[in-house]
Image 1 (cartoon, rainbow, N blue to C red):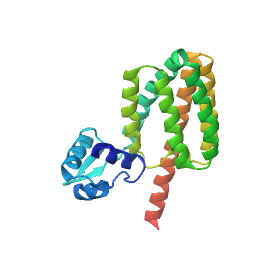
Image 2: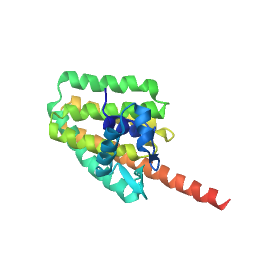
Image 3: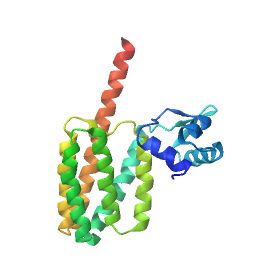
Length: 215
């Protein structure tokens, strides 16, 4: 059975709790069927990791502002690019075949942004593992945990799903060819496009909010 920390983190990751939502110790204990003490300790840990923020006396799921988002993508790009480079050097034939099958299987959920988002995380995690560098995997786990604070997946943008799988295929092809430079370049381009898409979606959402406030 998962501990309280993992349960709360999973609930944030799957969207049960979104940025700005208030987390109440007693409600969490009841939801997950655990006592309040491990919930309290889990909340303290998540606050220390900046997954939660203080709003008066309450704890809420943290929200990333524009600068934090940019900083997160900068770090993610560098770490993911390194993972792709190392995967091209160290991935086994079996690991490469698994990555290729993932791209093919993910076509079945190309029109389901949430399912594709989960598949995308699985694909990237497989590249992390294929790097065969445990310390890099640990750091990428932290980055991807923080990405749960993004309220909406960039894969919800029109046409993004199909482009994402094409980008994934280019990464797999480079890894399979053992071309570290090409794998890194393909991964960097993939993350850059995702970030640009997210910025456009955020700008559109901001404009919609302003328009609604004026009405």
